[in-house]
Image (cartoon, rainbow, N blue to C red):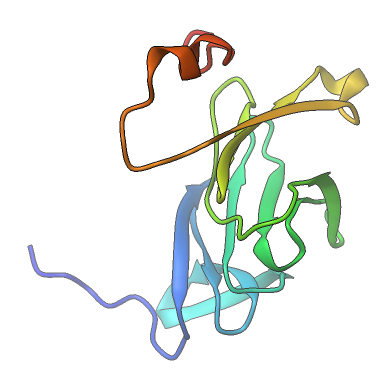
Length: 151
């Protein structure tokens, strides 16, 4: 099947996400999160400083954005982006949120942000560990909590 061009005239398009029947993406050149519309058009959802800029959706449809320039994890409140967590120094980039609502962000280290139930949503716990292009020794893994599907 040949590829089909859906959108022209954007800058550096990254982070495609399928959400509620729509294709969302980040345009790093303009610093925007957008949704693809028919006939090669897109609509602005929210501006966000870039590059880099990544986002994902929680199981309850909340939009979370990693804004590397400010080392922040932001949450879209329907009107704008508000800080949800300070990520610490470094160039943070990718984000993924699992089915349990755990937020994973990578950058100078991999960070897991555990969100409580709705009543305690403002509280969060985080841990990070250095990532490297090698397999970690068992001692390095022994103090890390178990994370992933089913945990």
